[in-house]
Length: 267
Image (cartoon, rainbow, N blue to C red; front, side, top):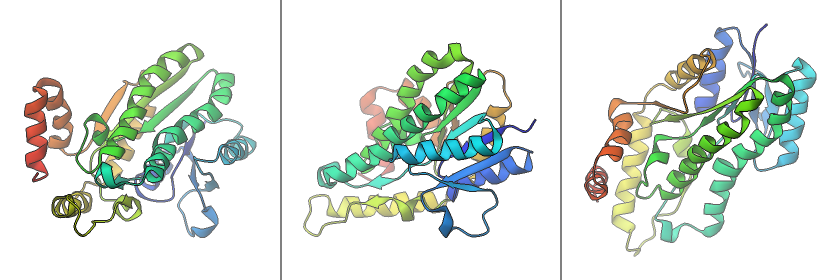
């Protein structure tokens, strides 16, 4: 029987690539979008869901269960980028980013666990980021929200293991998607002490995304995880140096690693 996969944030970018690839592998795929009615000719069905609104989560899960009777895999992909000097990012934007990137996935997990427990099986894959392994300058809020999701997954998976449910993280590096266009950018303020360096760093970050890898690489990793019996806790997908940066952080003295990051961002 074809496994049923629910992908949050499945209308574009990495989520869309995951859904398209799973469809070629005979999985039954449902994606989510805040406004699915506005999206035409999508390669797989989209269900309305806003991770910041628990009532839409319940309605989405119910709709998929009514159609297919089960949900075997949840890919927690919905997320939002945010950039800026932490001092200058409005507090409400920091909170909103955590609502989407951290509390949102937790809400979806809470919504789906009763069904997976009933099935005595299930797999939850949280899409985080390599940025979640380190505090990146002018991406600190994003790093923090994704890092928090990485850590809570470590705890969550131990709590649900006895129910026959697996949970893991997939941390992508930079991929060529529309995330740069959709994320919150704190404005480059004229006269700000961060004006010059933040402006230059912003250009660098956007270039990294534009020159990023094929999001289909993430999709292939998702299939590999679904088809393994015992998923690892953490997976990383991206360019060699992006993945290696996580290893370097683990082995280098803190200040040496910080110096490397500052040099990389031209600080």
